[in-house]
Length: 499
Image (cartoon, rainbow, N blue to C red):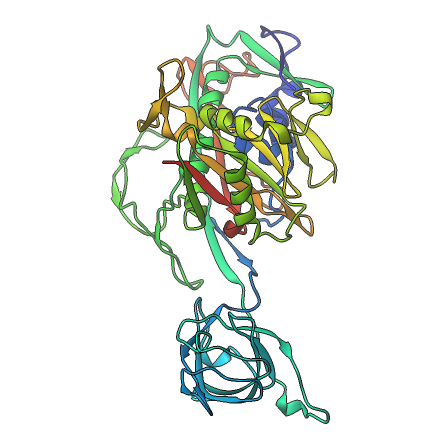
């Protein structure tokens, strides 16, 4: 889908086939409009493959979601036990008892909820033991099933439960229970806006696009505004950082944001609007992708040294936190320098019939089948997982990034940001994508892309109309979006940067 033709305003340009009028009646046309911008890869990819959150947000500007990670916590020895024969911190032979051993979780939870009576635990050496008493003040008594070494019986040794073993005739009171709670994540939606002014001399030039067989028109001067708006929205979805300093914790409170002033301005009727000093949540800027995954998997490579081994090792690292060990789908967003380095390293694993470059593909979450993404995307397979390279122009923008990473073969300066590779887990679980757009709206309201005209002495639809919103010899086109991005499980994503 693309701009099919240009022309002039006339009998064929009516309100019935105007793009803006149809957007109001059929908000799903926004997907068609966004498809005009495949180079804005994050927005385009999420819209193209219909990764839109099913949850509807109407009365709030934030969205909260839960992610259930591992059901058991990593546990280490806090205080070594005392073997009946070899004493404190000593080795334990098979059948020997170790008393007073204390454990501690490494990532949350209380010390007392780690193990239960008759749990079978495994030590780093491979030795196993049965918990036969405890916890009493977090102290357990274990009986070695196979030999436990002195190195096992030391502080910070990792101990894990591999199951349980009960005697015949055991009672229900002997059985322990453990429960894990999901991690909670929260993000805010951001309101993006832009406008352009169209005078009488510009009102005759129109462009046409096609949506499901119907030709829709819009004023050609809007194109530059839309180009800029879409690019800024893409930047926001990558580099945005939340403005909320303290989130509301109950329904009677409000968010406290970092922005402390709303600028002075003018109301529609011409009256002055004074500047206000407030941190009451009037501004809610949401985190972009990089802010959401910045605390996840991070690694680096040196320019010119990227190999297939480094990439597959990194895929293996982040796949440990994915829903499945294989069959996952990652999208690697990168700039020109990153695409060159990735292709050199992975060209033997490219997914293309008879060696032809056909572009990448990805599953449409609603259709359940792969769809072609176009030439800006290339797909590979590694470790049983599908990897699609997505060209991300925002990483190549010299007006946004200044740090250099050496020079290329032609002596041109490389941007370090252009070498960055952001691995995003685009897999789905029960039809829900790991990465999704969230939009304000419900019950017929959709603020993913709102576009409207404000008429003056020039009316965009009816020049014979006696009504005008103002006396200016022009009309304005406004575009607005209130949306955000969700990375449901940031632990299965990662950033591979050039050092």
